Image 1 (spheres, rainbow over the protein chains, first blue to last red):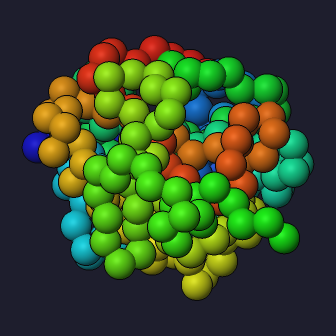
Image 2 (cartoon, one colour):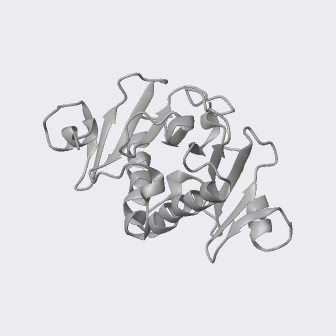
Amino acid sequence: MAKCIFCKMVDGEIQPEVVYEDEDILAIRDANPQSPTHVLLIPKEHIATTNDLDDRNVDIVGRLYLAAKQVAADEGIAERGYRMVMNCNPEAGQSVYHIHLHLLGGRPMNWPPG
Amino acid sequence: MAKCIFCKMVDGEIQPEVVYEDEDILAIRDANPQSPTHVLLIPKEHIATTNDLDDRNVDIVGRLYLAAKQVAADEGIAERGYRMVMNCNPEAGQSVYHIHLHLLGGRPMNWPPG
């Protein structure tokens, strides 16, 4: 199976603008930003969708949120507010089949969320 | 400090329609649904915002996603797709200051997510 675009970034075959990185997580700016801050938090392990999550992945999903909290603080939007979004499968508009948490902020967000 | 509405539900002082429950998580239908399925997954522990998360909460945040996966399957939308949203602070439109994961599906979701 061809390597997905996020795995290519993790492996250094594509060099995105990295805003946060640790042993297990990479965070990059979205190529089509929908708000002044729009960052994608990506586990380095390839997990296709949230339907593929099991007990083994609980920790990494939780740590995506700690990373999002850190990036929101770095971007100066932690107190104003920020939205975190994860899409699963076609009706949600999942674009890359490697789970990623969208972090959006820097403007008031509307409701419904899409 | 007054008990928040979700803590009142956890303590049985208010009885919502529960769609999922385990030792640490309660899931209920949103009172103002924005899609055919609109469920809130709530940790029983009171955590005001995602800015209050730390290493101690990694596990519960991850397990909200496993619960969302289960509810999506129960609702018959796992394969079609579903969106998960968490709001932090005013610009994101956080309504109750006790973290909760919105699970939305049953219709195509739009972009941007609000």
